[in-house]
Image 1: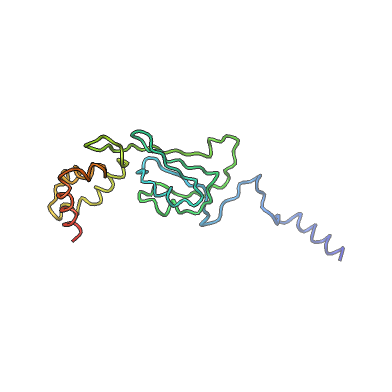
Image 2: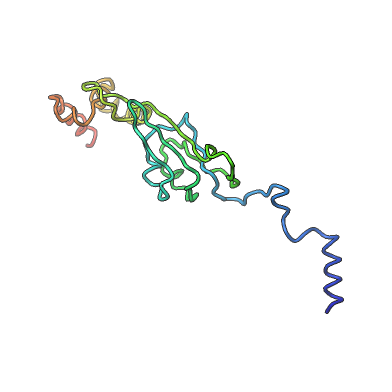
Length: 182
């Protein structure tokens, strides 16, 4: 028994090691590994879908003045990939990076700031500009199909919900939506 143990030990010294050499050599993450979420601020439309589905509450939204700030805190992230799945602009992608420890706490935070559109009537900020632009791009063909002027439609949607209830052209907006829903 002792002989066999000694022979196996000597063989192991000259063959490749049984364990990986991590952390002295980098270890690649396996295929399909869900690592740190990376956010592309150029693509982010500020809709907040990622924050609504984050079960760990690692993503928060704060509206201040005419800006919306979306904060990602990697310290709470469970790498579930829900934020990546729901992002309509594909601004969030999970990387294969898993070594997140750092002495600098700011390395755990990523903030994206997007401008808010102000209401044409009262001036209250109410919707992220990139989100509205993306929505208008998606319905542009539909508006053309039903001969609806996109600028007229833009004037209707650039009014906050509170003012929209008060203005007299609410009927015009309803008619446009009813035509589109048929």
